[in-house]
Image (cartoon, rainbow, N blue to C red; front, side, top):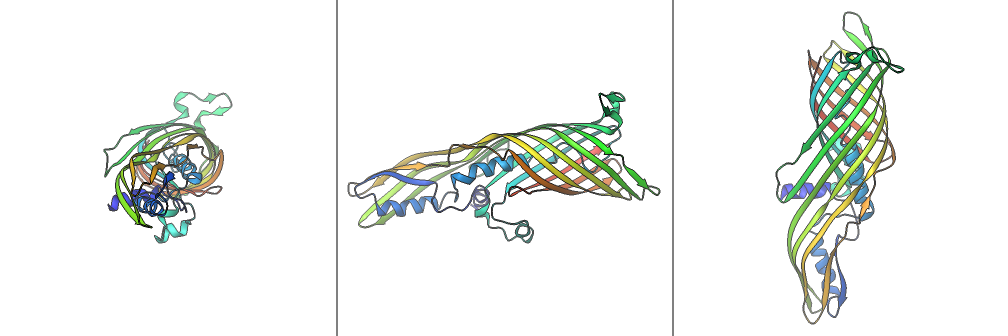
Length: 335
């Protein structure tokens, strides 16, 4: 139950009206059905269709950050790696709340998951020039991963990540002393990112309530989740600083042009039974579909540890125009 509670918290936001509603009421299905609604909704996310799907779509976009292009490595030839990413729409929670562990999970509007096996290639492997581009300053990146993990406590999920990036070193790197300190210059990165995710939770519910001399009960199954597909064209400016070839601090600013949609998964099976000649029908509604923010701005920073050719990094993205937060953790071999 603890795992279920945590996942449901990630899918939820604050709302005065629950997902489950009893409609088409007649006869004694009045106050008893109000009590029954509350009992059933206690088993479901505290969600609101006006924000839930957009939060899921924006979280999907954020989950792709850091899966492809490298911000802390100035590769000479080739780079290969594996990265996992998580995105969330924090809602009314602040970043400081997250750091302190004082998070109100009922305020989180959505989550997104991503992963990637990535490949980076130095442009000079393909020649000296490509139109106006100096290939010695150009790097190409691609990533892909399809994840279909086993079901966990009636939670089902599937995600696919794909992306292509091109990175150009606008200002060359500078090394001070015998490699003690180096500035990576200024990089500009763009490309295309596609994320698809299907996440749903299946919950069997048996509840009953009584009021005003009547009783009402529900026995059935609720399926709650989202089916999300997003496409993003990022534009990023970044830089990095390395100390002793071991520690690299990197950061930058990004703008995302995003499209796609998040469609609700909201299915209900089962019957509402009312005593004393009343009737009612169960209804589950998360809305139909929503799109991510067309244009969003963010900042990012991270730390990379370099062990000769082996690099491991942690990257954090923070939305400026929405409430998203992204976290990526990866390991790469750069040559």
